[in-house]
Image (cartoon, rainbow, N blue to C red; front, side, top):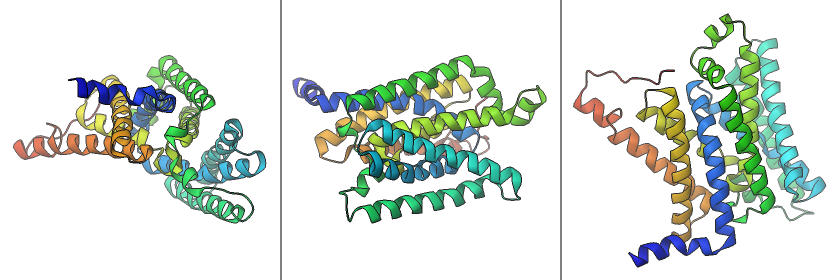
Length: 295
């Protein structure tokens, strides 16, 4: 028992581990909520495109202003918003579908970001891996304030617009028939997604940031059949998975960001294979149709 308590308490004696733990719990809470919207609206690949498209904004901000958290935040946020708005305009002004426009802009922006970072390495020491995979153990106090503000804004949005988000997630056509603007709601949710992705970049990087959103949500989607339960369970899975991944990375000597994503991935695979609504449930009751979350 003392060994178990020592394994839990020892990492908390280091300030960088405490900061990483608080940041991952905050980002996991908001990411778990937004992940449910992403899954139900079938925007998973678009979310990945948004995460990758943040790279050129971060690279330009880094070259101009250095490692300031707020400059990197502004650069990444600008690139993300440009991708989201640009994709929306291309979709509505041309015959290209939204997923194709997101994919095209993602490739353009990500390639541009890698090119900028590669070109800058000749005169500035730029670590491309830091941009791509983050460093959750390098989180500073300013990163914590950013994560706290982002999580608070996301929780406030879900509390105030809970019904609107639920209806728009399940049935955008009905949402439009009530006289509301689905485009405004959709862009608002995309803006929250971009904001949370930017806040998670320091911890997870451009490649892995979406894992903190998507994996808890798809796990909750398998296990739940109600929207409210799915939201709660997704946030809980994200927080517990992030905590478990951090502890595993400390004791196993593995990079923290990837370890968090792998931990959440293991939880997802376990639910997909062994839960009553997963593969095992269908094997036992092959005639049973899977049920889906309801409002």
